[in-house]
Image (cartoon, rainbow, N blue to C red; front, top):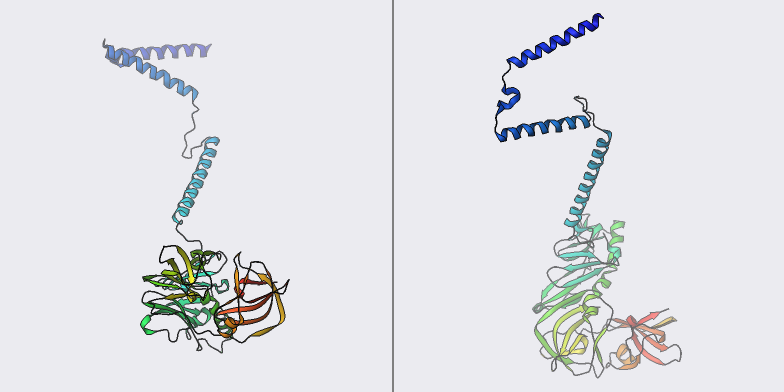
Length: 414
């Protein structure tokens, strides 16, 4: 009873205080100055709407405790981590994309040991692992065996053994290649690789000792590389324009002569024929190449402009030529094969000439013994080196016909 009476007096007292406060406060506290202005009434209505919206928001929103370490909903934390992870992944992807984009000019076949070559050449690796060396000052290309990878140095156009060059005492020089004025002649050169309008391109093979003979490793490396030099130079390619053009004619002692394609002569492609040329035809030569161990001229018919392709210089006679590529024929003696070699003609479908013994072995007039077809079966009984090639004396394996001497490049032995 006592508490009920007490509460009643408290409520009455509180009500009395509120009435006093309202009585003494200015009228404009609740009335907004009680203006009859339409805009003021609209503002009051908008204010009431805002109060209602706030009330609804407070009713539906979960109020989080205030703390210096704010506690966030678990779903929000998970989402944030995933977002950051995705962002980092996208950034990494972008970086990789940029990196790949910036490297599009990198040559994938570049030679790995770039410090071993100087500015006289460029080096790349072919699909078969051989190494392509292109000289920067003249149009010469060398192909090095794949076994040379990381074992050679090139300085000023010279091929050197890396094992010896790195020692710092001997230079390890194996061969040098360079240009020489035509007026100086070809004395001392191991081989003429090509010709420009006023210069020869020469290869000089080193004959003196360029390594430490007391060092077993240097000796083995040097001799191993040196054994490949002749093969490298025989497969060199030198292509240059002729200025002015040279005019002449086919000179083949009545034989038909083949002109070959640029792909075969200049790019090392499959051996393929451009034209069959007749003796005494008039030709105009516009380019010259050293390839496959021979000197070639790119020829057109002087009279009607037909393109003959690349013709072996041995079968060309130039009216005003100041230089002849014909060399003395270094001929070995004939060797009998202890065991006859059995095989077949391998010429990619072309006809191949077998020549007479008088021409191949005695230096007589060039004359044919037999015209042979691709895949014919042959038996070789003797061999000789002549006209800078190896020749086999061949008979038909099946019927015994005598074919004469056939270039080893067109033979495949079983």
